[in-house]
Length: 164
Image (cartoon, rainbow, N blue to C red):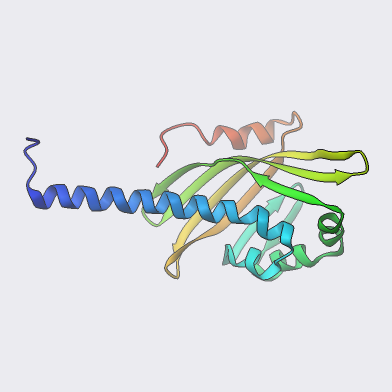
């Protein structure tokens, strides 16, 4: 016997189920990015973010859903996906704290070339997320190339510590 009452055990189990549900929802949210951005679905990509969310990637700053959608619809992105590409986000290390969370993962941009598939970029990613409108949304994403620059390694270092 643990000394817990049935009500205490139920409360503990409900908290744990909520924690696991949050982790799964966040994992699914992050996993949706690659397929949606490679499909060119600008609206769905933008909806992954909160209305005022931001995305900072290699010197390019996007703020708000309209700018995120514009990136997906841009000639540069459209030429990338029509030539063949895959944005792959690896498994994320996720920490949830109430209605806020952060996640860290690595990602690859794989491009189709005449000689086959090549890794065009390997990156470190840090996400801040918040529960809003009844679902998890990205409030900020920072991406740095893993090209030896310390900034990329610093983002990966945020994965240290307990998850969940």
